[in-house]
Image (cartoon, rainbow, N blue to C red; front, side, top):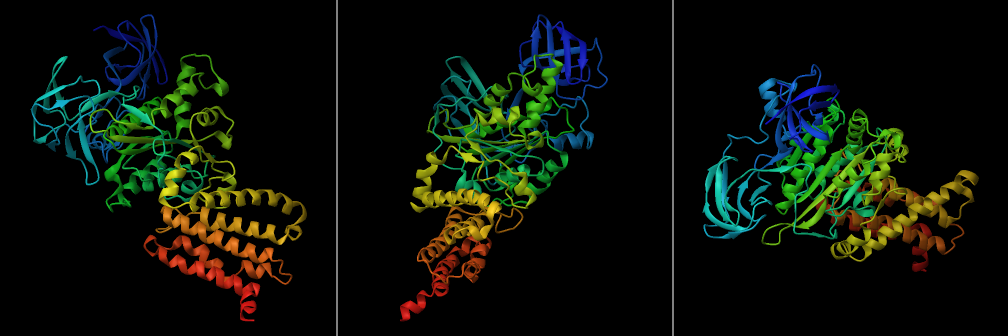
Length: 594
């Protein structure tokens, strides 16, 4: 194989000649330090290479070695609870070998070659198998059964030999006889990161991903297999919102990509996740999580690789039949890396200097989500839900990354700096945000919670919208100009905002709300509104609205968010108190006695 020679170095971009045998997206090793790179442009025998490590000190004439294979990830036991960098190098192994700082050219196998896993076969000698079939399992953690599958690129055949017992990821655990000849299978398979893994069929997103965050589940749900984005200015809570989703969403596997964000934010994740308990099992959350750390002080080109590395790992677990949630924080940093590389390639810039292909690259990424019927027999169903944070400069949602993302995703959780400054978290603006999955998941909510769920959601949103309209009047002429009915709308909307939508991520009870609790909380607020509206409409001349709004039961409604899940029956007493106290204020009890 020919050896290329460097003719130009421009930051993370290296141009080499004598690369006539190279193909697009081939993985290369640059210089004698064997820095990892990827071919991103070919002109004759010259190749432009983005290098995923620091290129300081490189010069013309140094060698470039083409591996002849695309940049790929290793998929197999050992992924769960691992912490990788953007090109799937395990950070804990790197630290053990070279210390706290990643040395240039360090080459570490992503999956441990020495660790032995207990392999339990699911097929026997003579069984027919096709691509995607599960041939055995490994209990990777207490929460995850790792299903060893026939790779997608292997032809159908039959099992001629199957192993049982302890083995490493590189040991042969099965031999197949296929139409293309004999095939040996290990517990590990490799897959190019830029190529989506195949599936049998993509299904409609009809099941919501329950997050335990009230404003999301009630007003702007995301379906399993769906796409969502969280745009917002600095300090509005994008990272914390994604942390909450990673902790509490009812996904069986979580892949968290820290793409270009500050190192201290990623440190919070690395320190916090091992301490957190999975709400369903009580086990540490890390036992179903894969972390990819590619912080802002790491080489800029590796940000692109980290996004594709993460989603390829997520697709792999989806193919096992799991529900997977992928958090990308943030796609804006990835887009900035694309812009830098595009500028160094001297490509024609698009809007704000971003490359013209920004929209198609974003679409390629988000379109790898979905709820699918997996390859192989048994009709396994998997789901990959993608949630990407967007960090528009100054919170300007008209900038290219935000606009390109909004054209692709179906859920928009718009964070508002004004809400964040008022300490209202999650700072999702209910008037700007939307979910296009509402109709898809309405049947699920109706069957799970009841007919009233969708009606209550619509009524609550209507009250919030009416509040926004009435606030304009209040700013002009004051609250005294409003009718009793309009003042009640303002009071109820305030209760929805403060008692329902506001949620404390650091409170051990309020950090998560089940659908049942969300339904009861919203029902209490609307029950108060209906009872109060009934007496207001009777036209009581002497009705004191302030006395109505300061009833003791209002405090109990506000404190309902802190009632533990196991004590939800206690909320029934609040329902009775609402009717009793409003009746007492309106004088209805006296009428009844008379």
